Image (cartoon, rainbow, N blue to C red):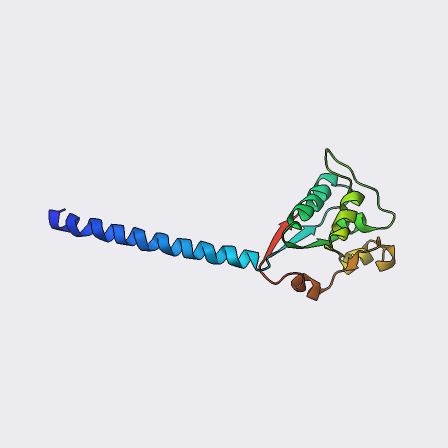
Length: 154
């Protein structure tokens, strides 16, 4: 490569680096401001009493996220069995029990929703749910937050 090409290539590379790093900082600030503006976390629980670790981890994450984010917890498949009035109080490791965590989430105003079709498949109805648990609807999935939605599946 000739010395003239090197002479022009180095300043050009420096300019590209300068402008691209400036754009990254602007993009990061925009992302941070959008997150603060109301992003939410959708926690999906499809396992029930047969998988207490999954259930308790989901509830634990929902509680942690609810500290500064909008949170909705959706239970389907066998997960609906965790929300029944006569549900077993699940325990696993050092996690607080399922009923303890559900009560904390309800106190914080976190929406806990059961799939109506999965309840029906389990031979249950809305009347079988713990107090404070709601039947899922399409609108609830979008109305719980104003920003982007992050989903965690358990």
